[in-house]
Image 1 (spheres, rainbow, N blue to C red):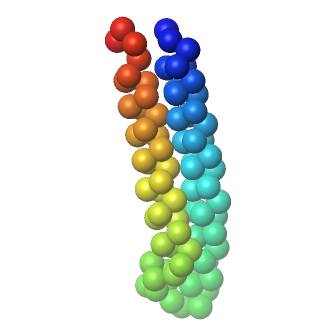
Image 2 (cartoon, rainbow, N blue to C red):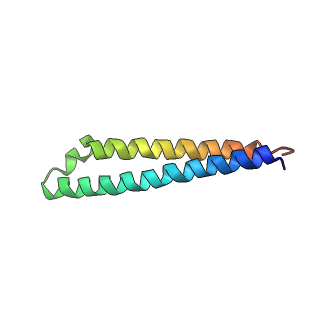
Length: 79
């Protein structure tokens, strides 16, 4: 295996793990916003909150980062 491939995979994995951690934080914030909306009788409005939009954006970023990791893995020399 090439050193460059190992470094690319490690970098992609580290980036994906950072994005996944950011997603977890965004989900916690969304869960809190959902609880506030439900407590106020406005559960139907939860998807209109900034926390929802941030969580969805974080989910997409996490998915993209793990996709990049998979592509790096697939680029394994000699595979």
